[in-house]
Image (cartoon, rainbow, N blue to C red):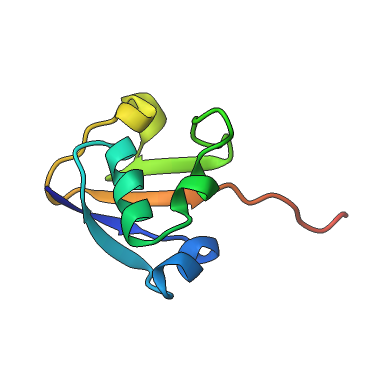
Length: 94
């Protein structure tokens, strides 16, 4: 089943600049593996050394946080839109 994945700016170097790609995947873990197979580097950027999604990475499925849907086990269906969102920190001191 094909799903559309929105690629954040910091990861677009992996997709030759594409802001969105389409992959076949039944769940979030399979989606990341499909991204890795087509665009090497996703796995190491999204997973930590223990094989867990990095704490600062959020995955949204149709605007719903995958953490509430089972995180990497969250199921996907054809036509879903998935967004990978790295947390941004910092700013100017006041």
